[in-house]
Length: 210
Image (cartoon, rainbow, N blue to C red; front, side, top):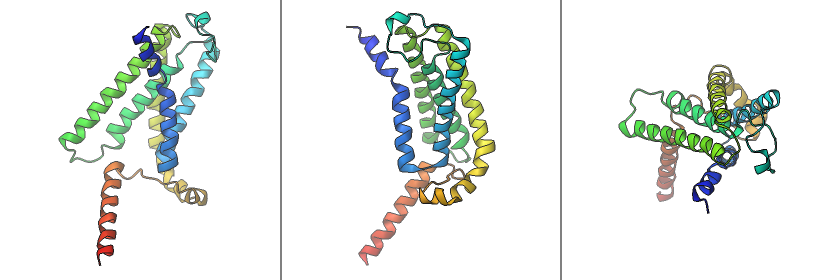
């Protein structure tokens, strides 16, 4: 009968939905930055597992959740995952996509709204772990800090190390076979795909008309 608990339990499934979304996006888009983003999330999870097994701090109520995969709770993996995703997405929105000086009001507005939504979801998922007795406040806090630091580090690594290599990787025969592409030099891939698709559709329509 705890509606808030049920809602927070569904919100705590956020990492699963995000992973499914990434896999779907990679299958249909096959873009190197998206693959790198997913690789960063996987690396972040590995770091979380390592920290947990070094610190070995127990969960607040071990007996209340017998289905958890690990008895250690410091730091919270959900909190670390969500803050990595939110901070990396924030950096991507404002530093990766925003590379032009002619940004319109609506363009900036949707970035601000999306950033607020990302932070709100990260806060709610973090709170859900305490409310549902999976973690303590300190475990959630340190998870958020670890995830944020990892996101900044991985974004810098991707921009400075991986991005210059993307054109070469995209030219590999195996990349061409799987249609893996590099869109690093395109400031706004959504707008680019929209305009290219619209122009191609009009061109084909004219050919059909003649």
